[in-house]
Length: 310
Image (cartoon, rainbow, N blue to C red; front, side, top):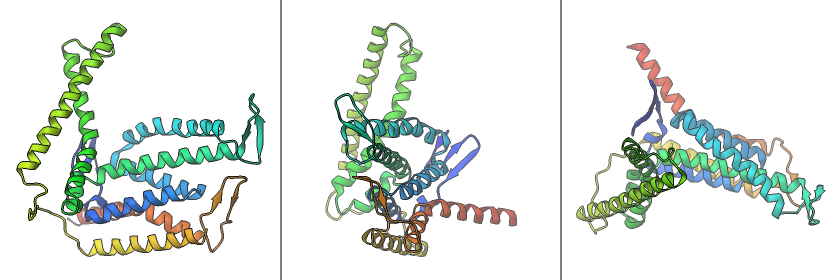
């Protein structure tokens, strides 16, 4: 697999994200909306919509392997929260059994734990796409003049995890080539090798941070009057997309105010029935979450049409 700015190459297939070519402001607003509403809406239908859309978008831009990696941790997380929550939360009227200490196990606490786990996995999926779309240069473009120090820290933080992982693989391969493999030898030898690799990585991270700070300082980052080159332009498609996001925000906010997404777990399960008043809010929420996928499919169809005419 090869990862580039314009797309991800897996085998012979290029995963191109056209939505990331939109203005950084639109990219940021989109993720703020979907992540914010995913946290605010605890209705199972809304959570299911957000999870499915987040998974589809992550697969379309990151490939199935990265999503499978998330699922390996995501599914156990859902089960873990479903098991842990009833151990500490005993609210609810539907009692299934009693623990040895006399505390009840309730259906409501189990369902609430499942809901919390699904929400956590959904946010992980959204942030995996966020990390791909919102690159460090977009952060610096948006916040460089307003909060230059914070924007630099955020951009470095977002870049640090993938860079650290890549460097870790390089160092591990280098140590393996000279006979230091963390998967071979006695427990003590493997521990020593792991500590050595970790020490190398800490040194690399500190040196990289110092070099970055010196580089940015030499370029006058943060000084008054400093200008920066930018390739981003707010065109008509960005205007229409921004209007769409604004409509979705106001419409869904009104749905929250009208309790269209209401779903309570304690002391008993209660929710507002799906009808002609509530269904439109779920449709708009689905349309908001699936927007990047629709944009990608639309652009791919345009590209195939142009190729067929050549």
